[in-house]
Image 1 (cartoon, rainbow, N blue to C red):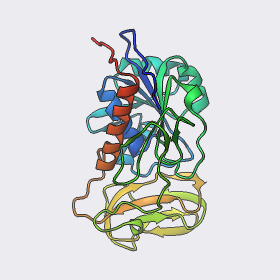
Image 2 (cartoon, rainbow, N blue to C red):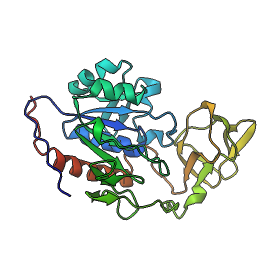
Image 3 (cartoon, rainbow, N blue to C red):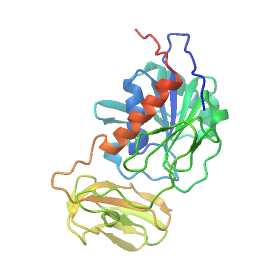
Amino acid sequence: MHIQPIRLHNDEPPIALILGTGDIASAIGRELFLARWGVVMLRDEAVPVMRRGMAFDDALEDGVTQLDGVWGARAALPEMLPTLARGREAVVVARLDPAVVIAACRGVARVLIDARMRKYAAPADLRPLADRAIGVGPGFAAGENVDVAIETLPGQEGDIISHGPTATPTGRSVPLGGAKEERFACALIAGPWDPWVVPGTWVEAGTPLGFLGERKLYAPIDGCVRGIVRPMPNGVARGAKLAELDPRPGAPCTGVPPRAGRIAAGVQRAVGALLPVRPVLA
């Protein structure tokens, strides 16, 4: 399948609209920002962010945050998003209704990227919502619900798919320090979540990580808290991943992780193919 590239004819920076504020979405946002794009990112409240030190999501709580030298800043008014993004002082992060933001950015956003990593959801057709649509991870099919899809399967992450679907999830986690699925602390019941520890804390197996409803949630292994979901007083779903432990000594809990960086590089290559003319900025 051949996709006709879009040609940019003015000196304004193009705007990328990214659905998701987790580590993969944030790596993509950072990559595009460094490539001279204006970037708007939207939190999906149904997808809790766990690796907060590796994401721009904390800007929504703290006003600003930084990811490997790039700032993220919170914005509240949808009509201001295009202006703020074009100003390129920071990646713009919002918790607004995606439909409202897409309407505000219609005719302005050159590319819409869904990087929410909702593995088993059935994505809607994103192509009518922007000049070009890119889907990251499972559920997307180039030529059906997006223009281009990006593979996230370990060993293939960052591969560009111009026709057909991405791979079906395997359900297996990428090992860290020999630990696979056992490094995650998951919700055994649905209920409100109140964490007790912060990313970067070293804990031993059996250490309480927080309260899920009226039950304590314990660390499954020894390790550094690589990520932990912030308080969710309205509740989390049964089975949701709430914390991740990394057993490696000196394990990083901030910055762009290697896998997310490879996926972001793939998105950047896809964007470069779809919109090959870089605007001239002062």
